[in-house]
Figure 1 (tube, one colour):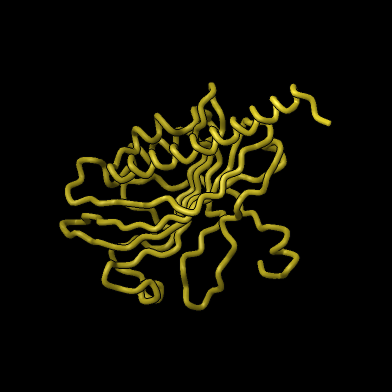
Figure 2 (cartoon, one colour):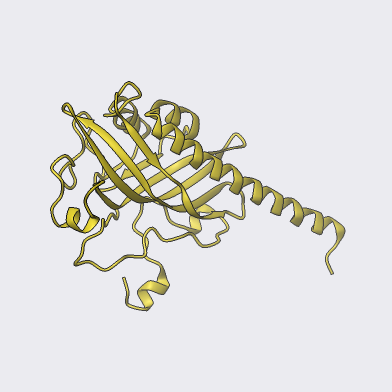
Length: 238
């Protein structure tokens, strides 16, 4: 039989967990609005961890693995700053799966993100559909949740009047070649852990893997590591 003290402790843990989930959902929502406004500067300073080992992995570009290189590529090298006329970016945040570590110091989450983009490039404006997924690790700093590792994965990107099947078979000219960053963005520090955009000849992958419950960070994996769930490996579907 539990004691009143233990019941009170468990209740506090449950409340803290719910508050953490709410704060993390709010961070991802704030990031979506800042990204839409081209405000990578505010996102970086307000939502990201102050640690030196933060990681940003962007689709097929690879990963930036230090605070300095993320700042140079994502903030200084932002190819579409707020001053860009005709820019329109919206990436919705859906289907959250969020786990808070039992020790309350870290958290993990994945999301599917439908969206659309309008990019002015060399005097022309290119509207397209852009769907992807997010895998994110969070860490608690000075009592506040912050982004620690952020992984953006591609589902598909296609002009608004063309199917993703057509674009998968022949990539639109305005999009950079696979693995090539946009002009002005410094190359990534590290290669891609995983990114598989839609291709008619490929089977779907269970990526990113939604987090399981865990006690402390050493028991889990990073959002910017390739992790295959043991059940998938056992079933021979990886």
